Length: 342
Image (cartoon, rainbow, N blue to C red; front, top):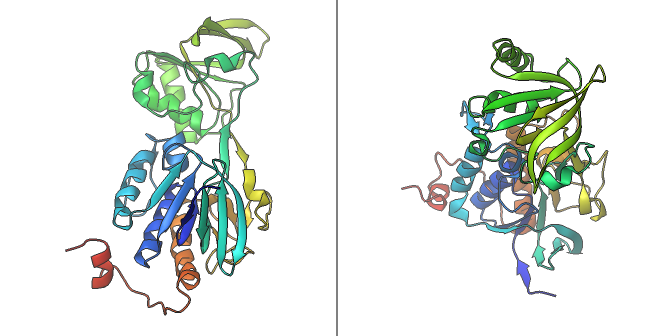
């Protein structure tokens, strides 16, 4: 066994809700370590739509997924959280009251008084379309997420799908790409009506192509795509020239080891009470998309709220003998000192 890492709180998941939780915990003098299966912080925001704008963060009219992540990282700097990336927590064992031993898939061992599950919906993986041999092109010319828009400049891009992701990236990449072709199995889209209207206007103006049908085969060599074979709704087979393909068939949620941690589950989500978002196991909390309760709304701002209330209850476990006095950052000189405010 490796040396045990001791901390007040272990946060599982370094997405926006987990990051803000570290801020709320830090204000109350609780130290946090993070474990995240991704190789970077930011969760879905950084992994799936780092350059896509987000419009519903309070006080910020528009921010990208990466921009929000960067701002949260700057906000928690005064508290010096420690990140363990590219690792997955496999076991959570209660060894005291309260005390937990958590072990990752690399053998790293943590001991903490509080566990915060902020793992989104678990481990999200894109659904792979049923196209023979697609694996050979993945990561080179077939991509399941847009991490850097510049990658698609001057490319012949085939986007497959009919939901918000497919339409959003059709519109966002259109100014950069050499040519965009959107392929969907039917002429009916699940995306926002305004996005569909914009796409149809581009098609009508001859600035992009819309095709109906499904990809049945890919052509190319050494991971580089040159074209896709498409079977139309009329059963006619044709070729679409493309050097990049973006299939948006949705995401598969894999809860992973969370199911083995002894906490109650409900439809692959973690039920919590709403005063502190604690699970059925005292000292284990769940915030963000992974939890469920009556009236739950899966918004980042709701996860921020959950993190704030969670930290108040967590303080009781970490400092059972210390009375918690609520303070505002706007008026508390002690909180401002923690934040480095002059």
